[in-house]
Amino acid sequence: MLRSGLFTKRFNSTTTSLASGRTSQVALLNFPRASLLSFSSQTPRFLSSAANSFTHLKSQLSDPTLMTAAGFIDNEFIATSSSGKHFAVYDPAKGTPIAHLPDMGIEETERAIQSAKQALPAWSQTTAKERSTILRNWYNLILENEQDLAKIITWENGKPLADALGEVRYGASFFEWFSEEAKRLYGEVIPSPNRQQRMIAIRQPLGVVGIITPWNFPNAMITRKLGAALAVGCTVVAKPASETPLSAIALYELGRRAGVPKGVIGLVTTHHDTKAIGKHLCESQDVSGISFTGSTAVGKLLLKQSADTVKKVSLELGGNAAFIVFEDADIDKAVDAAVLAKFRSSGQTCICVNRFYVHSSIMDAFGERLRERVEKFRVGSGMEASTTHGPLINKASVEKVRSHVHDALDNGAKLLTGGKESENMHGYFYPPTVLTDMKNNMRIATEETFGPVAGIFKFDTEEEVLEYANNTRFGLAGYFFSKDVSRCWRVAESLQVGMVGVNTGAISSEVAPFGGVKESGIGREGARQGLDEYTQYKYINMAI
Ligand code: ADP
Image 1 (cartoon, rainbow, N blue to C red):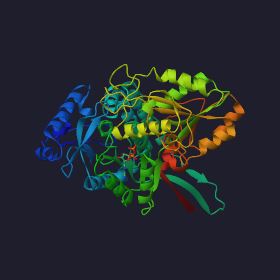
Image 2 (cartoon, helix red, strand yellow; image 1 turned 45 degrees about the vertical axis):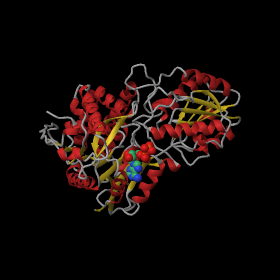
Image 3 (cartoon, rainbow, N blue to C red; image 1 turned 90 degrees about the vertical axis):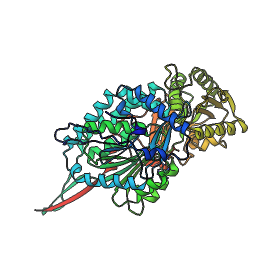
Image 4 (cartoon, protein in one colour; image 1 turned 180 degrees about the vertical axis):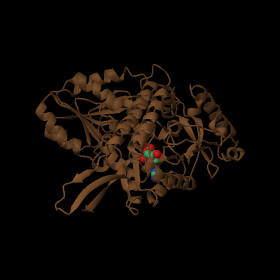
C-alpha cells in the first residue's frame, strides 16, 4: 500500500540480489506533519489544491504507485527534505500546481553521492550480461507502463499525449540499446613494438556520475544518460528539472522493480538549491563525471565548476538550427519536415529549427504552404485528443517567444499566421506563428527561440546560405533540402553542426550519435559513442 506523495514520508524498499533479478518491496509509511508546516510561503488553499490535483491525477493511472512526490536515495523514496521545504510542480496547460516535491539540498545530494560511491565496487564488477539483464527488465517495465508514463509527462510538461507516448518509447529505446551495447564494451589488443611486452587497453567505468536533465524530455533525457552510465558499470546521482521531476521518479520506481541494486541510482529533487547542488556535484571528489543537457549558459558554468576536480564532462546544450530549402528541393517534403522539425513539442527541443533559409525563388510558395499547415494545428491541453500542440513550459518561455516575435515585426518581418495571443487560454500558450522577410539583425537570427515560431529568411546562393547558417556560436543540428546529390554531400560536410538532416526533419535515434559542436556541447549520447562518455581506457603493459 502506498500513499499520496504529499502525505508520505518514505518508502523503505528492499531490493533482492542482482543474481535473482527479482525485487520485493516493504513500504513503511509515516506522516510528516512537520513537513506540511514547512510550506510557509504558500496559502493553505494553494497547498490543498495541489494535494487534491495530485490525488486526482494519481487515481487516473493504472498503477498509481508510479506517481510519487519524493526523491530516491539509498533505495528509499524520501518525501521530505532536510530543510523541510517543498516546491510546486505546475500543469503548464492550466498554470496550476499539481504536486509538491521535497526541495532537497546539499545534505541529500551528499547522501546520494555516498550511497552511489558505496554501491560502485559491486556494481562495476557485475558482468556486462547482468547489467544488460537489468536494463532489459527496465525497458520491458517501461513499455508495460507506457500509458501511465505518458500521462505523467503530459501533466507536468504539457506536450500532447500522443507525443508523450512517443517520448516514452524513445526513452525506452535507450535502455534497449544500451542493454545490448553493455555486452560490446570492447577493449583493444595492441600489437606490441617489442618482443618482451604485451599491450592491451581495457575500458572501465568512470565511477559515480552526476546527471542533470531538462524539462523538455522529462523521460528520455534521463534514460539516454542512465542507460549508458549503467551499461558500463557507473553509479549515478541524477537531478531532474524542477518543472518535471515526476517522470524521473516514475522511472526510478520501475528501475527499482527491474532490480537495480541499492545505491546505484539516486535522484535528488530540488528547486531552490539547484545551483548549489550543481556546484556540489561538479566539485565533489567522489563524483568522476558530469552529464548535462540544458542551456549553454548553465553548461558553461558546470564545465568551469568541474575544472578543479578535472572531471569528464559531457554537455548537450542549446542549438540554433538552420533549415535550408534550396531551389531544387521537393517543397512539399520540406514543408512536412518543417512542421516536425520546428513545431514538435511546440518548438521546445534543442534540435528544433530556429532559422529557415529558403531560396528566394521559392520563398513565397514555401511560406504559403507552411502557413496552411500551421493553421491546421489544434493548440490546447495535451490531454485533449484533438490537441496537436500543447503549451510552453512556463510564463518566462511565453515571454521570450513573444519578445522574439515583436522584435521581428518591429524590424520589418511579415506575419503570415499566428502572433496574436488568445485571452481565453489560461496556461502558458503561444500561438504557432510563421514570419517571413526575416533579416539577420533580428533576435531570431542569433538567439534560440525555443518556441513555436518559424522565421523565414531568403537567400540566393549556396555560398551565401552556408555563411548565414554557420554564422553562430551554436552547432547542434542542421537540416537542408535538395535533390542534387553533389550538393547534398557538399552542404552536409560544410554545415558546422554535430547532426545533419538531409531531406528529413527527423534525426533522433538511439542508434545514432547525438550531440553538438562549438558551444552546443561536448560528447555524444546514444549510439556506440554514448558509452565513451562514461568510460575511460586503462592501458596494461605486461612483460613476458
Ligand atoms: P532551461 O532554460 O531549458 O530550463 P537550464 O539549463 O536552466 O535550461 O536547465 C536544465 C537543467 O539544469 C535543469 O535540471 C535545471 O534545474 C538545471 N540547472 C539550472 N541552473 C543550474 C545550475 N546553476 N547548476 C546546475 N544545474 C542547473
